[in-house]
Amino acid sequence: MSRPSAISADHSTVCTHPSGLDPTRIPEHIAVIMDGNGRWAKARGLPRMMGHRAGVEALKTTLRLCSDWGIKALTVYAFSTENWNRPTDEVHFLMTLFERVLQRELEALQSQKVRINFLGDIEGLPGRLQELIEQATSLTSGNSGIHFNVCTNYGGRRELVIAAQKLAERSLNGELDPTLIDENMFAKELFTANEADPDLLIRTSGERRISNFLLWQLAYAEIHVTDVLWPDFDEAALLHALVDYQSRCRRFGGLDPISHERLES
Ligand code: FPP
Image (tube, rainbow, N blue to C red; front, top):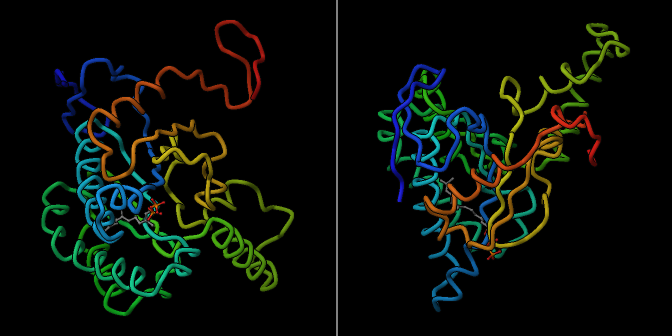
C-alpha cells in the first residue's frame, strides 16, 4: 500500500513515508487512546483479555510505523486511574501483560533506539512492574529515537493536582514567588515535562471523549476519531489519521494565515 520515499528527518534518522503524506507536515507528537479491545474480543466470542493481547500487537505496529515515519513522540493511554474499577481478574491480567511485554520487548525497543517512559502514579503499581519500569526507563534513557510514553495509572486531573501541589509547596518554602507561576512553569511540573504537546490525538472505537487523558497537553491537539477497534488499528488506519491531520488548518486560536479569516478557534 505504501510507496516509501526516503528523506532525512531533522532528528538525524532516515525516515520513510508512504505516498499521500506530506513529509514536511508530519506531527511531532501523537497521543493515542487505545480503545475497543473488549469489543474486538467480544465480536469474536473471545474473553476480553484476548482483546488486550491483540492490542499489544497493534501497539507494536504503531510504534514501529511512527518511528519509521519520523514522529518524535508517541504517548499512549495504557491504564487510567479509573481502570482499577474493572474486575480484579482483568486488572491482574493487564498488570501481568505489561510486565511480560516489557520483559519480552525490551531488547527490541533498545535496538530500535526507542526511549521509553512511564507517565502516571508509578508507585501505585505492583512492585515487580515498578522494577521493570525502572529498568526499561534507565536502560533506554540515552536512546536517540522516538520517545515512547506509556501512561499507566495515569489520570489527567490527578496530574494537574500533583503539579499544583508541587508549586504550592515550593511557594510555601519561600523558593518560589507564586505571582511568577506561568504556563511554562506549570507545564514543567507535569509528567510530560520536556515533551512538546501532542499535535494529534487519535481515539479508536468511535468514542468521542477525552476520558481524563492529557487534559493540559491536548489544548490545541487535532482530534481524529476512528471507528476502528484498537486491535485492528494498522498501517492503513494510521495513514488515514495522518492524512486527516494534514488536511487541518491549525490556527492555535489565531487567524488563518492565508485568508486572514477568523474561523472558530
Ligand atoms: C481499552 O479498551 C484498553 C485498555 C484499558 C488497555 C489498553 C492496553 C493495551 C492495548 C496493552 C498495551 C500494552 C503495553 C505494554 C503498554 P477497553 O478494554 O476499554 O475496550 P472496550 O471499550 O471495547 O471494552
